[in-house]
Image (cartoon, rainbow, N blue to C red):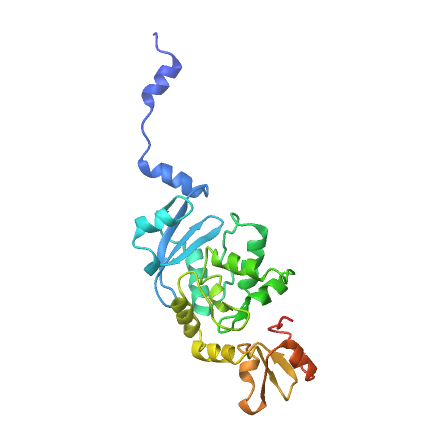
Length: 254
Protein backbone atom coordinates (compact mmCIF):
# COMPACT_ATOMS: atom_id res chain seq x y z
CA UNK A 1 0.00 0.00 0.00
CA UNK A 2 1.61 3.19 -1.21
CA UNK A 3 -0.74 5.62 0.53
CA UNK A 4 0.72 7.53 3.44
CA UNK A 5 -1.20 8.44 6.57
CA UNK A 6 -1.29 12.04 5.37
CA UNK A 7 -2.85 11.00 2.07
CA UNK A 8 -5.50 8.95 3.81
CA UNK A 9 -6.34 11.78 6.17
CA UNK A 10 -6.61 14.25 3.30
CA UNK A 11 -9.10 11.95 1.65
CA UNK A 12 -11.25 12.06 4.78
CA UNK A 13 -11.49 15.84 4.88
CA UNK A 14 -14.86 17.43 4.46
CA UNK A 15 -15.55 21.11 4.16
CA UNK A 16 -17.14 22.49 7.30
CA UNK A 17 -20.55 24.16 7.04
CA UNK A 18 -20.30 27.89 6.37
CA UNK A 19 -21.91 28.63 9.74
CA UNK A 20 -19.00 27.08 11.64
CA UNK A 21 -16.61 29.91 10.83
CA UNK A 22 -19.06 32.54 12.03
CA UNK A 23 -19.85 30.56 15.17
CA UNK A 24 -16.17 30.30 16.02
CA UNK A 25 -15.59 34.01 15.43
CA UNK A 26 -18.58 34.95 17.59
CA UNK A 27 -17.75 32.42 20.30
CA UNK A 28 -14.21 33.71 20.64
CA UNK A 29 -15.36 37.33 20.77
CA UNK A 30 -13.69 38.30 17.50
CA UNK A 31 -17.07 39.09 15.97
CA UNK A 32 -20.11 40.80 17.48
CA UNK A 33 -23.71 39.75 17.10
CA UNK A 34 -26.54 42.24 16.88
CA UNK A 35 -30.31 42.42 17.17
CA UNK A 36 -33.07 45.04 17.14
CA UNK A 37 -34.73 45.81 20.47
CA UNK A 38 -37.40 48.25 21.63
CA UNK A 39 -35.95 51.49 22.99
CA UNK A 40 -37.43 54.33 25.06
CA UNK A 41 -38.50 56.34 21.99
CA UNK A 42 -37.78 54.00 19.05
CA UNK A 43 -36.25 50.63 18.18
CA UNK A 44 -32.47 50.27 18.40
CA UNK A 45 -29.72 48.12 16.97
CA UNK A 46 -27.77 46.59 19.86
CA UNK A 47 -24.50 44.70 19.29
CA UNK A 48 -22.73 42.50 21.82
CA UNK A 49 -19.99 39.93 22.31
CA UNK A 50 -19.14 37.62 25.24
CA UNK A 51 -17.72 40.61 27.18
CA UNK A 52 -20.88 42.71 26.92
CA UNK A 53 -22.75 45.23 24.78
CA UNK A 54 -20.55 47.17 22.37
CA UNK A 55 -22.92 49.37 20.38
CA UNK A 56 -26.36 50.93 20.53
CA UNK A 57 -27.78 52.83 17.53
CA UNK A 58 -31.38 54.03 16.95
CA UNK A 59 -32.92 52.34 13.92
CA UNK A 60 -33.74 55.71 12.33
CA UNK A 61 -30.00 56.44 12.07
CA UNK A 62 -29.20 53.38 9.93
CA UNK A 63 -31.02 52.12 6.86
CA UNK A 64 -30.91 48.35 7.34
CA UNK A 65 -28.75 45.48 8.57
CA UNK A 66 -26.18 45.98 5.82
CA UNK A 67 -25.89 49.67 6.69
CA UNK A 68 -25.49 48.86 10.38
CA UNK A 69 -22.78 46.27 9.63
CA UNK A 70 -20.91 48.76 7.45
CA UNK A 71 -20.96 51.34 10.26
CA UNK A 72 -20.10 48.91 13.04
CA UNK A 73 -16.37 49.04 13.87
CA UNK A 74 -16.13 45.24 14.25
CA UNK A 75 -17.25 42.38 12.02
CA UNK A 76 -20.76 41.37 13.04
CA UNK A 77 -23.74 39.23 12.16
CA UNK A 78 -27.43 39.16 13.04
CA UNK A 79 -28.15 37.02 16.09
CA UNK A 80 -30.46 36.54 19.05
CA UNK A 81 -29.80 38.10 22.43
CA UNK A 82 -28.92 35.52 25.08
CA UNK A 83 -31.79 35.30 27.55
CA UNK A 84 -29.70 36.50 30.52
CA UNK A 85 -28.43 39.54 28.62
CA UNK A 86 -31.90 40.25 27.22
CA UNK A 87 -33.36 40.25 30.73
CA UNK A 88 -30.74 42.69 32.03
CA UNK A 89 -31.15 44.91 28.97
CA UNK A 90 -34.94 45.01 29.37
CA UNK A 91 -34.55 46.09 32.99
CA UNK A 92 -32.03 48.80 32.06
CA UNK A 93 -34.35 50.21 29.40
CA UNK A 94 -37.33 50.07 31.78
CA UNK A 95 -35.52 51.80 34.65
CA UNK A 96 -33.21 54.12 32.71
CA UNK A 97 -30.25 52.77 34.68
CA UNK A 98 -27.40 50.70 33.26
CA UNK A 99 -27.42 48.50 36.35
CA UNK A 100 -26.11 44.99 35.76
CA UNK A 101 -25.86 45.23 31.97
CA UNK A 102 -22.31 44.25 30.95
CA UNK A 103 -20.69 46.64 28.48
CA UNK A 104 -17.49 46.15 26.54
CA UNK A 105 -15.43 49.36 26.58
CA UNK A 106 -12.14 47.55 26.02
CA UNK A 107 -11.42 49.40 22.76
CA UNK A 108 -11.58 52.82 24.46
CA UNK A 109 -8.91 54.85 26.21
CA UNK A 110 -8.80 55.26 29.98
CA UNK A 111 -10.09 58.85 29.90
CA UNK A 112 -13.13 58.00 27.80
CA UNK A 113 -13.87 54.97 29.98
CA UNK A 114 -13.83 57.18 33.08
CA UNK A 115 -16.14 59.73 31.40
CA UNK A 116 -18.64 57.07 30.30
CA UNK A 117 -18.67 55.31 33.66
CA UNK A 118 -19.35 58.60 35.43
CA UNK A 119 -22.05 59.47 32.89
CA UNK A 120 -23.74 56.13 33.63
CA UNK A 121 -24.21 57.29 37.25
CA UNK A 122 -26.55 60.15 36.27
CA UNK A 123 -30.07 59.05 37.30
CA UNK A 124 -32.98 59.09 34.85
CA UNK A 125 -34.90 62.34 34.92
CA UNK A 126 -31.82 64.34 35.95
CA UNK A 127 -29.18 66.25 33.99
CA UNK A 128 -25.63 67.35 34.73
CA UNK A 129 -23.26 69.74 32.90
CA UNK A 130 -20.05 68.59 31.24
CA UNK A 131 -18.10 70.29 34.00
CA UNK A 132 -19.72 68.03 36.60
CA UNK A 133 -18.28 64.95 34.93
CA UNK A 134 -14.88 66.62 34.53
CA UNK A 135 -14.79 67.52 38.23
CA UNK A 136 -16.10 64.13 39.37
CA UNK A 137 -13.35 62.25 37.51
CA UNK A 138 -10.70 64.54 39.00
CA UNK A 139 -9.95 66.59 35.90
CA UNK A 140 -11.98 69.83 36.20
CA UNK A 141 -10.17 71.53 33.33
CA UNK A 142 -11.14 68.86 30.81
CA UNK A 143 -14.65 70.09 30.00
CA UNK A 144 -14.09 70.11 26.23
CA UNK A 145 -12.44 66.69 26.35
CA UNK A 146 -15.43 65.35 28.25
CA UNK A 147 -17.72 66.67 25.51
CA UNK A 148 -15.61 64.97 22.85
CA UNK A 149 -15.57 61.68 24.78
CA UNK A 150 -19.35 61.73 25.12
CA UNK A 151 -19.73 62.59 21.44
CA UNK A 152 -17.99 59.29 20.66
CA UNK A 153 -20.06 57.27 23.13
CA UNK A 154 -20.57 53.87 21.44
CA UNK A 155 -23.47 52.93 23.72
CA UNK A 156 -25.77 55.96 23.93
CA UNK A 157 -29.13 55.66 25.72
CA UNK A 158 -27.74 52.84 27.88
CA UNK A 159 -24.85 55.11 28.87
CA UNK A 160 -27.02 58.24 29.01
CA UNK A 161 -24.99 61.02 27.40
CA UNK A 162 -28.34 62.68 26.59
CA UNK A 163 -28.43 63.63 30.31
CA UNK A 164 -25.33 65.81 29.97
CA UNK A 165 -25.84 69.47 29.05
CA UNK A 166 -23.77 72.56 28.44
CA UNK A 167 -22.13 74.46 31.26
CA UNK A 168 -24.75 77.22 31.02
CA UNK A 169 -27.51 74.64 31.52
CA UNK A 170 -28.80 74.66 27.93
CA UNK A 171 -29.48 71.27 26.36
CA UNK A 172 -26.82 71.47 23.66
CA UNK A 173 -25.97 69.02 20.90
CA UNK A 174 -26.28 65.25 20.63
CA UNK A 175 -24.67 62.67 18.37
CA UNK A 176 -28.10 61.79 16.92
CA UNK A 177 -29.42 65.33 16.82
CA UNK A 178 -30.77 67.77 19.44
CA UNK A 179 -34.39 66.74 18.83
CA UNK A 180 -33.68 63.14 19.83
CA UNK A 181 -31.95 64.45 22.96
CA UNK A 182 -35.04 66.46 23.81
CA UNK A 183 -37.29 63.47 23.12
CA UNK A 184 -35.21 61.25 25.41
CA UNK A 185 -35.30 63.82 28.22
CA UNK A 186 -39.05 64.23 27.76
CA UNK A 187 -39.52 60.46 27.98
CA UNK A 188 -37.86 60.65 31.42
CA UNK A 189 -40.27 63.30 32.66
CA UNK A 190 -38.19 66.42 32.05
CA UNK A 191 -39.41 69.52 30.23
CA UNK A 192 -36.82 70.77 27.71
CA UNK A 193 -38.62 74.13 27.45
CA UNK A 194 -38.23 74.71 31.20
CA UNK A 195 -34.60 73.62 31.07
CA UNK A 196 -33.83 76.09 28.29
CA UNK A 197 -35.79 78.87 30.03
CA UNK A 198 -33.71 78.50 33.19
CA UNK A 199 -30.55 78.52 31.09
CA UNK A 200 -31.60 81.79 29.43
CA UNK A 201 -32.11 83.31 32.88
CA UNK A 202 -28.65 82.00 33.94
CA UNK A 203 -30.16 79.86 36.71
CA UNK A 204 -27.56 77.21 37.46
CA UNK A 205 -28.73 75.97 40.85
CA UNK A 206 -31.80 76.01 43.07
CA UNK A 207 -31.99 75.83 46.84
CA UNK A 208 -34.51 75.33 49.60
CA UNK A 209 -34.81 78.10 52.17
CA UNK A 210 -35.91 75.50 54.73
CA UNK A 211 -32.91 73.16 54.40
CA UNK A 212 -30.37 75.70 53.09
CA UNK A 213 -29.16 73.11 50.58
CA UNK A 214 -28.61 73.94 46.90
CA UNK A 215 -28.78 71.48 44.01
CA UNK A 216 -28.87 71.18 40.26
CA UNK A 217 -32.45 72.08 39.29
CA UNK A 218 -33.32 68.54 38.17
CA UNK A 219 -31.93 66.82 41.28
CA UNK A 220 -34.57 64.64 42.93
CA UNK A 221 -34.27 66.72 46.10
CA UNK A 222 -34.63 70.03 44.25
CA UNK A 223 -37.80 68.80 42.57
CA UNK A 224 -39.34 68.06 45.97
CA UNK A 225 -38.88 71.64 47.14
CA UNK A 226 -42.19 73.52 47.32
CA UNK A 227 -42.36 76.56 45.04
CA UNK A 228 -42.63 79.05 47.89
CA UNK A 229 -39.38 77.72 49.37
CA UNK A 230 -37.45 77.55 46.11
CA UNK A 231 -34.49 79.95 45.70
CA UNK A 232 -32.56 80.34 42.45
CA UNK A 233 -28.81 80.93 42.14
CA UNK A 234 -26.55 81.83 39.23
CA UNK A 235 -23.46 80.20 40.69
CA UNK A 236 -22.32 77.97 43.50
CA UNK A 237 -20.42 80.90 45.03
CA UNK A 238 -23.64 82.92 45.13
CA UNK A 239 -25.42 80.06 46.88
CA UNK A 240 -22.64 79.56 49.40
CA UNK A 241 -22.38 83.29 50.08
CA UNK A 242 -26.08 83.14 50.98
CA UNK A 243 -25.35 80.42 53.53
CA UNK A 244 -26.38 77.40 51.47
CA UNK A 245 -24.38 74.16 51.32
CA UNK A 246 -24.05 71.80 48.36
CA UNK A 247 -26.33 68.78 48.03
CA UNK A 248 -24.52 65.53 48.81
CA UNK A 249 -26.58 63.65 46.24
CA UNK A 250 -26.18 65.69 43.03
CA UNK A 251 -22.87 67.20 44.19
CA UNK A 252 -23.04 70.51 42.29
CA UNK A 253 -19.55 71.22 40.99
CA UNK A 254 -17.86 74.49 41.88
